[in-house]
Amino acid sequence: MRAMVLERTAPVETSPLLLKEVALQGVEDDEVLIKVAACGVCHTDLHIVEGELPPHKLPLVPGHQIVGKVVERGKKVNNLEVGQRVGVPWINQVCGVCRFCRQGMENLCENALFTGYDLDGGYAEFAIFREEAAYPIPEGYEDVEFAPLLCGGVIGYRAYRQSKVKEGEILGLFGFGSSAHLVAQMALFEGVRVFVFTRSPEHQKLARELGASFVGRAEDVPPEKLDAAIIFAPAGHLVKVALEYLCPGGRVITAGIYSTPIPELPYDLVYKERCIQSVANSTRKDVQELIELSRRLHFKTQIEVFPLEEANRALLLLKESKIRASAVLSI
Ligand SMILES: [Zn+2]
Ligand SMILES: [Zn+2]
Image (tube, rainbow, N blue to C red; front, top):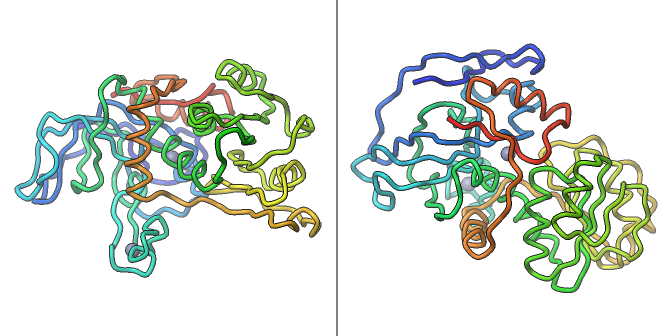
């Protein structure tokens, strides 16, 4: 099969992913073989390819927002059928026995394995995973449309739930890329008012089109205080800005796997029970709930589609903030 393979981490400007012919392994009893139709391109892939996240496996096929069809299943696979359309997200396997797994916090599992990081991912024509890594996904979406929901959507969903924002309240979104534009749709669907802070005129336009009630840059003071804020941009100073705009008792959620340092904070900004929390990975429940939500709310995913062999170019455009919302490889 053809795959885009990372042999050595390097700046994406040097096109570190190489198009290769890779031998396909057979499936184990508990695994499925998936013919990949689409795979989202994520900032985390960029951090992996460039080595900001230390490599767990090389050579590696990146990609963790996979949509495809099951074409073969092992003898012990019970819940997936050949021909079924499935999605595979970032979290792939958890141990089930560590203190976090035992408390339903498997997103913090100490022994977790991640798609396209510990295991070869979806920048390829085929992928093999254990059955529990693959989730049936609803009809009504094209393959390329659904792919961004599997990372931006899932992590965004977790961040949104952790913000604890309720109907009628105001949620501030800092940065407005792949994940944020999906969270805006979740929030608006549930009657939450959305304020968007982003520098990009393109992203500002998209935020207005989706129904944000306030759109500005981070330094533009909003007309009302925020009940909660989610920070998607990897810029630590935004934590301070969000706290300045936040109601007492409000929560600031940081959704990134990576950020620049958070500056020193005057105590006043966190006093009155304001809270800062990061979101890390997701649980199976988050993935299932987001897929369930995608049946009731038809997400409009803004995508730019690239062929498999242009994965380097897609990552470069992502790095240069030249993608309007989500980049997806069509395979
Ligand atoms: Zn565990
Ligand atoms: Zn991702």
